[in-house]
Length: 307
Image (cartoon, rainbow, N blue to C red):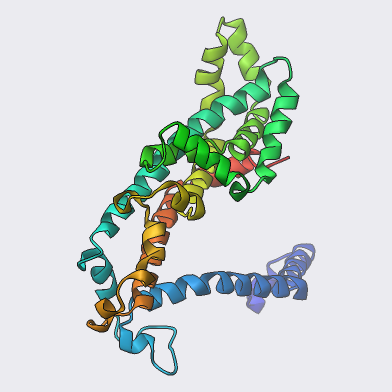
């Protein structure tokens, strides 16, 4: 600020500007910002390393001193796993992952929205006990009930089926119902009371009043469900036997089982192919979050994750 401009500002206002400047440069804030930047860098490092490794050939991957960025970037690893003989199933596995994730996401959002509204607005015997019992299921690890789920899926003839896998993923409703209940509790009751005076039925209250105001919570549930089903490994490996029905996460884990001669005869390596597969696994999740991030933040602000 020049001297001429300083003389035109009243003393009190100039003092406020100086105090504001000092507050912006407080050491505590600088330390906090530096720590946040370091945390972001640590979180981004594995992603950057995977992308970099997927763009390297075998010679550069196994050099004595590895580099963070590829000296000679190439898309050969992606072309290799998508078109090489013996790996034709990878594009199919990618489609299977999309199919399972999108179907389970749609089912979960629909079921959780109706369940959350029932627990938030409807009155019926044992409502709170049922809700708390359902909520407690979120603390039970999926692996703990894996054998029971296996027997149930086999009894219903849903094993080794992508549709059955999507239905199984949509059955994990404890967290989604909890999120949607909190979202509906944040919706003002006055809006529904006004609709009741106009003669709206319970279904009309849900469909026309409550559900449109809970889109933020729905997006939160959709993102969590998509990520959970897209990257699942243990449950999918247990339920799916046919190679053509496996998801991408299973296909990537089996890259190391491909014949070593397959890689020794090319300029690419197992590690580079696995890195390319991991990048393919990350991209859809990032795209979904980027597309829905505005509604995701809105859901957080509307109380979707508030207790």
